[in-house]
Image (cartoon, rainbow, N blue to C red):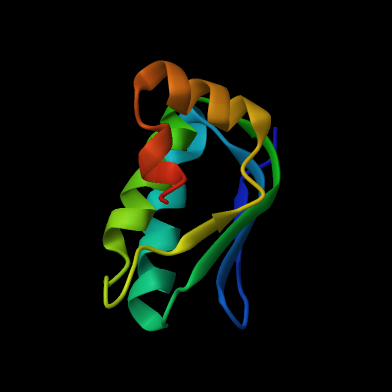
Length: 98
């Protein structure tokens, strides 16, 4: 298992590695700090290798942290596992807004 790594991009943030219960709190804190330091129009999660329900909760919380001027940030590259967990939990629409 690796941790979740964050990188700043031209559009916002990129996440890679594992986003799991074991590192959810650290990932949320790191992501939240980056979000407060820059505009975020997109969160690229295509580099996520493993995710669980705690990881989905972190993504939801990070989206909520983004200042909403016109719209929530776009989530790009959502792993299938994350989509399935969000669908079962009834929150897929929050991760994939219209």
